[in-house]
Image (cartoon, rainbow, N blue to C red):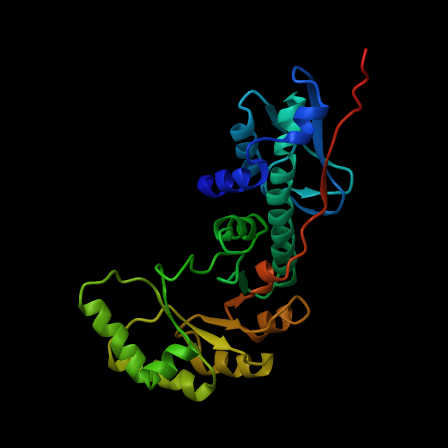
Length: 285
């Protein structure tokens, strides 16, 4: 994550901030503050801290709230004091991270609230902005959601294409069993199913292979079909609903009895939270 911040700063700052260097006195020490222009959940404060540390370690960084806090319009999120040029040079990158992360955290919070009382938990997906996955998944957790797999390396997730390429659900799971038998790390195994028939095949095949599944993912099931799957599995395995689910349909899946609902919209369709850095005007002598 620190490498990504450094790369983003290099992209924005380049050889130098020519606007600030040309228009603001070099020795001017000033103050600034970042405020909320929308209601939401703030995230990315610690990322912003690192941005200013890279720009100028002498900038005093004073958060007024913690990451994951609810903010209202007009709330001060953090205060800054230091060289005016340094504050101006780090402003946009700090805000870009904070606005994006706060938008994700706010949607995750909304999703979590919608699932209250159902027992289901909202998960993110790999549908993240390239290079920003760790930041966006951090924001999901700050908003009250939970993280799905981080990448292709920490979970085996047999999806429809894997089944189709392997030839069948049985063949795909047989391959997973062979993979583990070769000594590869026994990461969690989740299987996506497209129908109740495929769900039954996954349960039967995994039992035959003596392969322990972590959960079953119900792909593009309607809430009523998801309820049927819950009744059929009867608690043998946790169930996850996924596929085109948004805030308008989320609760119906929780009420169907699934354990998890994964939403790509948490990261691929989120609106950044409106934040702004303000400064008191500097009056020249």
